Image (cartoon, rainbow, N blue to C red):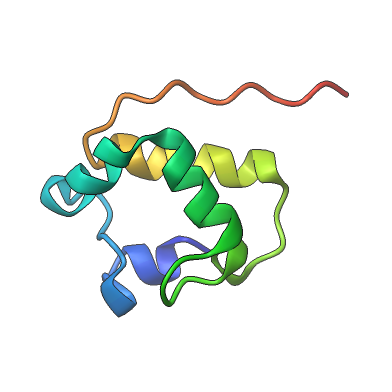
Length: 80
């Protein structure tokens, strides 16, 4: 779901592994990125327009941000 916009930079989405584009977003912090991904921001709908668990979204945020230069820890799975 994330790749649909983040690979090509659709609607201003920071491109995958583009450290210049991700830098300011990373500076805002993991929680800000996660909130944007969960609730939506700009042209990006809540959960990127998908229907995923908060944990899946958190993992995607960390993956994308880390490829863009962050060093966020992998989120822990929720208790069963």
